[in-house]
Image 1 (cartoon, rainbow, N blue to C red):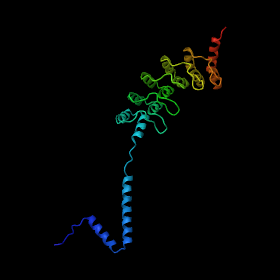
Image 2 (image 1 turned 90 degrees about the vertical axis):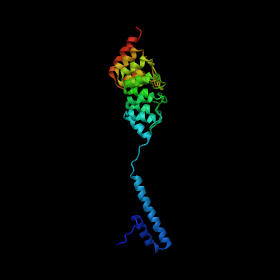
Image 3 (image 1 turned 90 degrees about the horizontal axis):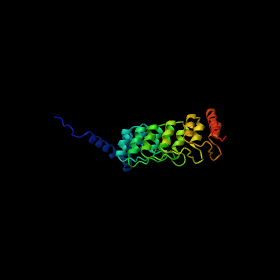
Image 4 (image 1 turned 180 degrees about the vertical axis):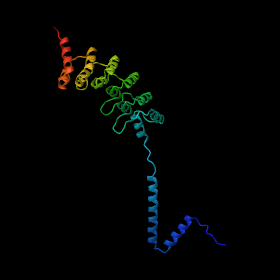
Length: 249
């Protein structure tokens, strides 16, 4: 009857390796052991490198905000994610949602009791300003319903809505007591921004709500000057006619 070895493959390999190194000097045996360890470490590193890279929770949250993925946002918020966190450019999540017109995500963020609806980015812009600039009526209404400040000091939402000629948002803001002649840090008014952009209907809307067409900014320009400089003939004609109507006869 044959005598079969009961050694495992690992034991055979170990025994064989031991036999190969038995005749070597201690220095050589040490070098062989180091080489084996290095080889084993290389395999281990390769195994770790093959593992899939998991996105950080913050990156997942930012991506969800950009794509209006409200389910993911709610999930992250339930796990303790800060609704006021910023992306790597310093833009708060709510401002990012306004920029991307992610209305469902914005609603989820402002519903969080920890959310600061007045939070601004590095340029001093908040969610209502960017929503007004984008003509996002739904988001502006949402923020107003949460008592967001309509008359922000400096550049205000009304400046931004007027700059792009969003008459519906201009009217909404005015209906909620937005100051029609709000002055930016350099004295620019919403009327000047509307004139600069050539938005004749917005110019008329602001004037009909009491905007002062004689106000000048810090460099001495009024709305008519803006219209002339930016070559908006319809606005120039309309403002000129309105000025003539207001002059004493």
